Image (cartoon, rainbow, N blue to C red; front, side, top):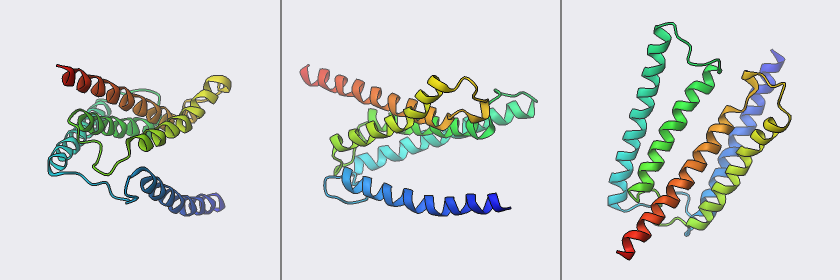
Length: 176
């Protein structure tokens, strides 16, 4: 019982801290220091389509897991939170890739350089546990593996590559 109380206390302290940090990051990353990103009408419509694709990706993932479970199959020996988290990250990747490709990802008041700096910091923060595991984690169990850090690192890497490819395509189209 005492362990649960301590965990709840940590959670109660951690959540407001994360919210404050996120607000500060948005204020830093937007040109006008606003928390909310502004989009034009075209971007809003395209973002709605991106969210729809991401949502349906997550629904398909969960249906896939349900069918496997009903059939008595286990996808892997990974913990269930890791399997469901993977679906969430895949859905987020779909939303972001569609947004980048349709040029609805960056808002009108976003400072791209600052956002790239934030993403780079997040990439490093999430890659550190993976480097630690690769270096010292030979006795690590499946339950102890930092799956969410792995997913976040891969997601940021995929989004960065997608943004670079889109930038190259746009540059090539401008030259023609």
